[in-house]
Image 1 (cartoon, rainbow, N blue to C red):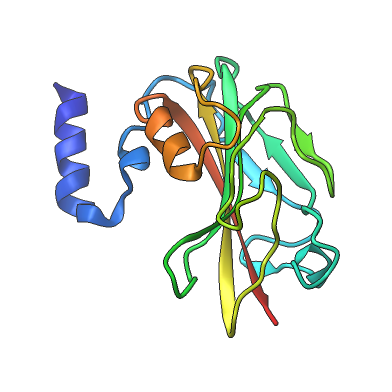
Image 2: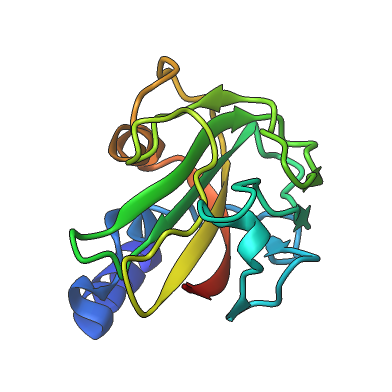
Length: 178
């Protein structure tokens, strides 16, 4: 009953500003600490160096994941640009990442299943804004299942499969301009 009242309050208070995935984050105990995502290449809301852009070396930045819940069965990663003129643009999608993954080194793909980004590729594609400064949102999710999706599925497929199975999430934002 308390969970339903909390959900109703969140919907009324935040309206549609929360995504369906955020509304479906489980309220299970996750071991206390809040999961965190960071990079040694840029700070949260800082500028992403050009080496990680499509116009640079187009390699993925190093990522560190901390305080992963002990009961996680898998992790999922998505990176997108909500400032894209054509709507949110996906740059990286990977799921079924082992839950003991503490870091993703620069220029590497984490172990897991590769999803298709909006460039049509199964790997990292860095910032490439047509103009201005864009924000790139790196999201890591702790899930209570392995996702039953084939390699090459897209971010929307991943988000749908994750519904009701997310119990922790961490976000890192970076900015890039040409």
